[in-house]
Amino acid sequence: MAPLAVHIKHAGKTHDVELDPDLPPAVFKNAVYQVTGVPLDRMKVMVKGGVLKDDSNWKKIAPKAGQTFMVIGAAGELPKAPEKPIVFLEDMDDSELAEALAKPVGLRNLGNTCYMNATVQALRAVPELQVALSAPALQSTTPLPGSLRDLYHNMSRTTDNVTPVGFLQVLRQVNPQFAEMDRSEKRAGMGIAMGYAQQDAEECYSSIIHSLRNVPGIGEDGKPVSTGAQATINEARFVEQYMMGTMRRVMSCDEAPEEAHVVSEEAVLKVECNISAATNFMAQGILSSLDTKIEKTSSTLGRQATYSQKSRLARLPSYLSVHMVRFDWRADIGKKAKIMRRVKFPLEYDAVDIATDELKEKLLPVSRKLKDVDRERGERRKVRKKTKAAQPAAAPAPAASSSTDVEMTDAAPATATAGGELEPEEVYREKEAKELEALVHPDLKKDLGASNSGLYDLVAIITHKGAFADGGHYIGFVKKSVFHPIKGSAAAAQAKEAAEKSGAVAVAEIEEGDEDWYKFDDDKVSTFPVEKIPTLEGGGEDSSAYVLLYKAKPLL
Image 1 (tube, helix red, strand yellow):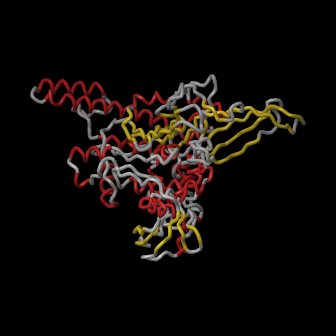
Image 2: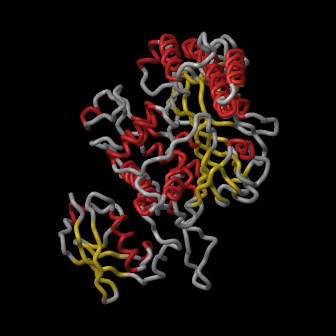
Image 3: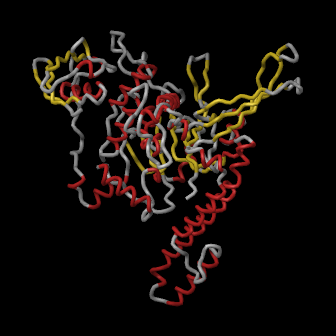
């Protein structure tokens, strides 16, 4: 349904606003706030049947073009105009355009909402999610998937920071815990809560993914399942395909080895990294969480006995979430206190060690080959970089050019042609892809969205700064390559074509080998050098990695 031009009446004045019946009521309320200054928590919009609520159904209200709505509530300060005037893309010069397109947009903090902003930015590292959310029939039991789709849509069509008020309202509607008020802030002498409380970013991350579990999956053609019928008949959902692993647990009695082992399986959306006084590395902390001891009654011994539980993943998803368990409940202060210990995490993670023996056997052929291929790609990249740097100096002197050719042959004998020069990178990639594809196990080929090598690249991080979970500040970090295709690649051409068709803001391209990141500190977006990633490993109250998102290495 097309947006409707309606009127609102507040404090004796009438204002014209736009009402879109396809969007949640929270979006309309935000439009009312923009013209009246009445805060959302004090606003009452009178509609047919009573007061407009965040979960009201527009179809039942049946708004009409030209209709007037009464608004009740004391106005506060009107939203301030931007400090800098808005400049449209067509009015920018080349340097301004390059700067505007270079960085993705940030999200404004609406009062202790950094936990949500960091989470939303981190999930942008899953491009398949935005494809799934674009399904024509987005079937879900909650309005959150549709609201997230609209937020990402808006973020892709502007170079200015976005105010995520609509998504925030829906998040609080679906998960009331995020609407908790901060009881520590009181209006002087009145005892009235002033604002919303800080929340745990990992809980927000898990809640959003859980709310996406009914989003239709993606077909073999790379497009979302098109109809609700397909989404309900034996079709995997998106989260099941790309973000959910299968954990197999084997429990055995230490005191009665003859007792039958208990084997169980469960779906998991993350693996945990336990942090103790002896934990120095992420892989070490993950294994600690997977191999545990528990006390339970033994049917063989007829008493309490010690059991060993060994857990391993029988399915590795394309996106592996790692929760760094940095908070521990302290009864003496009644808060979740932060574990400050420094724990190193890798930019490339080999998850074969946490796979079951059966899965490990399927993964290893591709894993070993892909490691060799990565080394060869790195060598070629160095040669091309060295050749590019030497070309200006070599041009006037044939002897220097000949010397350069010899050096190239020595640097990468396995990948150079007979003349000592490298072939186009696409030639090598096509050959490598065929070799790797031939090694992929048939079971993994059929499992769309599963990792087929067990090797991962780190693509997003959510950090926490402070000493307690219900305080401090959360920041998101996302790898630049998530947003920008490699210059001159097929992906760059596809991205440009897609932007032109959809009306999205065109994205800048990056050089091959650019491993830098973006830092999303609410509405402040900056480049974060890859060399500084180790500063997020912890060791104090400063920003420490809390949620890590790894993406399965592509074969191409």
